Length: 290
Image (cartoon, rainbow, N blue to C red; front, side, top):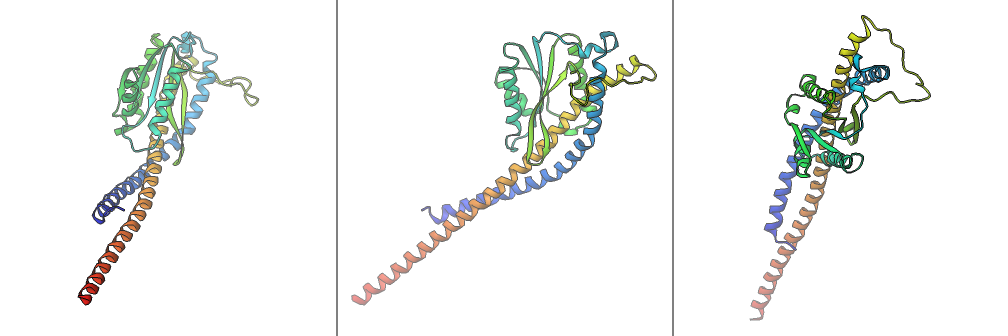
């Protein structure tokens, strides 16, 4: 059994760690509420805009803006990996990195693959794996807004239209709740046509005012920027949910370990006191015999 001094030091150390993890849990919970509200408010708008864009893209030619929907043989791929700048959030970052690696080794094996990293963790990890990191955006989460994400989307769109990439995918964690984040791979470019279903067997017929060309030229870029912004908001909320859950578990584990250590400390202290009593009794008995 460990000595009393060693056990006391461990109790102090774990108690300090428990205070830190508990504080981080409360901070993440406060940030999660704001991030969750942001993505909840964005989803209906982003979903409807994407639905309109998909229906429009099915009937566009290149001159009307269909360049964003142009299907080409996939040789050059860009992966937009959305992670966080910090760790201590469970499997949040590793899930994004694993999903990105699965694409490079699976669907796009043998292709010319580049990575645009939003968040420090994906950029560092994928660079160590030998992937071509064309751009890192580590500061977007310091002031996350549509205006900070839009320029990134614009650069990607321009590169796609110029033929630098034949396919662009976004890899991120989709927020479900504080305990559940779903690793998601989402096609960004070319714009995917609407999926056929029993409820939607034909494209919606829209009435354009002032005109189809003018609306499309503004709608497609705005929809794509919104799609990337929504994915980033999803990831941001997922990060805080994952960190809150991870810190909650760490605090519980520290509490359980602290309880065990205190029990060990009390047992060691009791054993030491018992030994001292036995020594005193033994000494007294020896004096009496003498």
